[in-house]
Length: 511
Image (tube, rainbow, N blue to C red; front, side):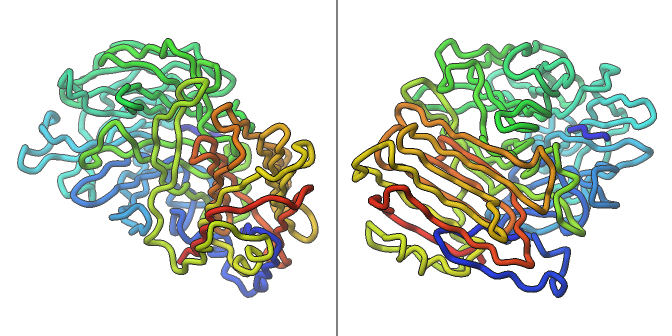
């Protein structure tokens, strides 16, 4: 993509005191335990994610020279389980004042590019090359014959050039039905997605375009296109990232549900869950540039794996971390689902059991607030799941439940459920990041099929972030936050009516 220009959450009524910040190492002060972060310097969009020979590859927008945006290159890390990551040397670096913007990578199993062989297929990265001298953005490629440890830039780059200053973020995949490569790429200022085909990753022919739909307030970036199925019916999901205009303000993602015939993308004729032609993927402030992994073995249309950059362009350069800046979300599984209003995407975190150090789950079906307070003492990175039952509320208008995180007696995070409106509201404030755009109120409206007495809640907290999944991931909100490490942070559970139940309580502390 283009961009020119924590403290802890804890829950349920206990206090957590941090050590003296003067004695802490600044570079690690907000470093999460299970979210991917760069070893140092600036990071933004995930790029070129693919799976090959037992390794998940994650490339990302990276500045090798500082902790603000600039000198864009591709950082690189690998994982065998999407939980534990190994940092590798920079894969593609800025050269001759040409930056390496966002893009994708594929394993060319049929050696259509001629960069390798059938016995040893090459890995080909397709990325936006940004010429700082002219301001032009075009699509270029590089290839690797050593399992993505080193890349060689193609001598005839760029492979696609429209002489445009806003033409970026190619996502490429192999179309088995038509035996060709497909590229989707954004004309960012025109709010269009262009569709190209190629037999060899070098020569590209325009097929069609999609645009003038959805949110057009900000630039369009980092598109993705993939099929998902629900009860035997396959739909094609087109995700488009928004530089501005997300439902919670600033940058975010919206998506379309439709059909793709190998050439044209057509919106679905049936109504979506939101009742609009598009829907939002995350109702928080900090989920951007998400793209899916390619090449996962035996991958069907039942699910896709992806992750996003956990930040917002409104304040990305101002978040209070030293030495490094930027983190990714927990990798998530994507599913196509349906409720009374139509199709929607559902997100669930991947299996995180490898990252658990302690199981503090309550084995019984019900648990009281007092029991929760005892279990939760002194934990700042954990995976929590429970159901809320409101079946005993005598008066629905008197049924608010509130989780709030206080920093020096001032609210940093307030999550509340109103049993009358049947909606969740998350309010975020923070003294460490005193920008108007950071302060936010987020409402997660529940659809008719979610409107029930038992509410499923999952909260992943990792020092500087909270990822909230409601109703098994039908509504998601991702937020950074930064409590004052010199003070005591406490979180309280309150209810206007104390008669409620926590059911199937599960808590795992992260390593």
